[in-house]
Length: 186
Image 1 (tube, rainbow, N blue to C red):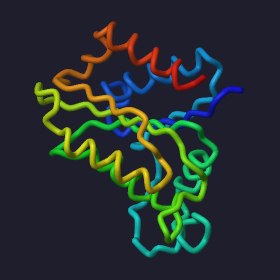
Image 2: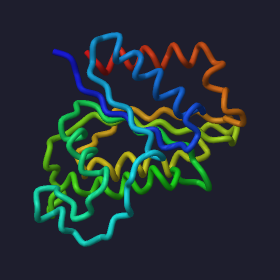
Image 3: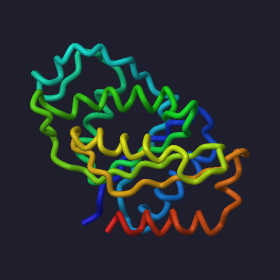
């Protein structure tokens, strides 16, 4: 039985390092026949969370009528969720943070996920050449999303991304990402 994979590209650069890396994981998933959906967050209409908590009382239905309605449905049906983002000023991009905030609709008032537990892959890129410089923040993100039913399976951290083609020009990394996609899709 094929798996359903939902991926999010949280970079405004649609052909940059995050997009290249996420798409290579997806290529590996597709090679095993998985159903894959990739969203470019920058192209979506996602409003900021109002913090009203209505989603806790309505089975995950948000009062905001925007693209998150479809995204919550896709994530609820998924086996694996991939979130890719550059790190800007020590945090994920604004687009990615807004998505993550709105994932609160995946959980009830007791922090129990409405739709079960999904595997989560978090992929980060950043320009600093030091490999673990944002490690505490990255660990924090994975821990936070588990309450929404997104259980961290793997963090992928690609540092030293000064140029938008760093990932595209790294055949060894692309092969590793492709193998990961094949592994999670069986």
